[in-house]
Amino acid sequence: MPPPTPTDSLLADAAICRPQSRTDLFVSFTMLALQGFGGVLAIVQREVVEKKRWLTREEFLEDWAVAQIMPGPNVVNLSMMIGGRHFGLPGALAALAGMLAAPLVIVLLLAILYGNVADTPLAQGALRGMGAVASGLITATGIKLIAALDNNPMGRALCIAIAAMTFVAIALLRWPLVWVLLGIGGVACIWTYRVLGLKERLAQGAVP
Image (cartoon, rainbow, N blue to C red; front, top):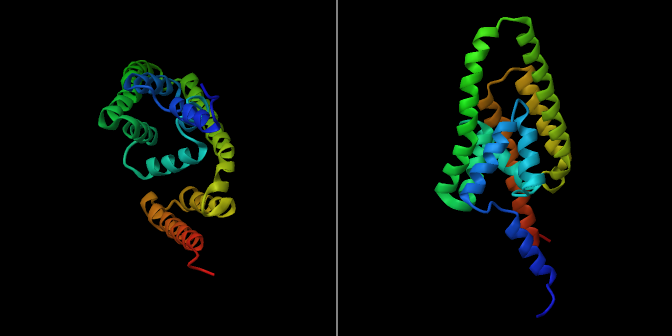
């Protein structure tokens, strides 16, 4: 038997880096959902990219961007995209069930308990503390993913500039999200389309 080639190794890695079944999807997203207290972006990136290796960092950024502009919770949208990509509609439904089933039960129980202590200083302090931790997790994940912007057609510098403009528009100027998406997001999409078109023409030798 001939020794394995580098191509064989890549194919083996590709076979591993995908959900093995709809049950795998359900269990994985159930465990992910049970960890997602506050800073869910950090948990999703760690589980899907670093542990499961279902997505590269670049793919995660692209899919997360799509999930952001779709109606509904971002992480639920992402889970359904991953499930649907590998197993079609049954996979999307399995991922959705994993994201919602266990957390729904826990949220209902916590809502009942929280109603009795909502006005106490201890509960208010705990919520503020969790908010600070969630902010730190999201910031750390964003910094970790900056390197993936090097492969973006717009380049790292322009991507960071667009992110800064989005932050100013939403956090400081309080513009409606839909107008920010249509305005800044639209400009970014048009710019990326032009850059990709230029690269394709250069590759074909149409531009000297």
